[in-house]
Length: 97
Image (cartoon, rainbow, N blue to C red; front, side, top):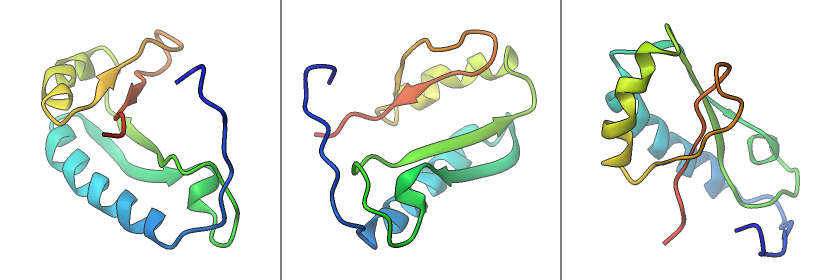
C-alpha cells in the first residue's frame, strides 16, 4: 500500500456500519483479552468529515503480552499483524479484497 496514492473521499454513512460489523467480529475474537471496549477512531469516525476510506479501530486489552495469543484467531479473520510501536501496541490491518 505504500506506493498507492492517498485519496480523500466525501463522508460515507456506510463507514459506521462497516465499523459495527468489524466490532462484532472483534468482540467475539478478542473476548478473553478485551478491556474497555472497541472504538471507531480516526477521520472516518467523524460524521460529515471527508476522509481516506479506511476504518481505524482501537481495542483495549488487559495485558499486551498476554494478548499475543490473539494473533492466530485474528489471522483467521483475515487480520494481518504488522509490527508497529512494539511494547506499546499491537497493530493489525485487514486488507481490502
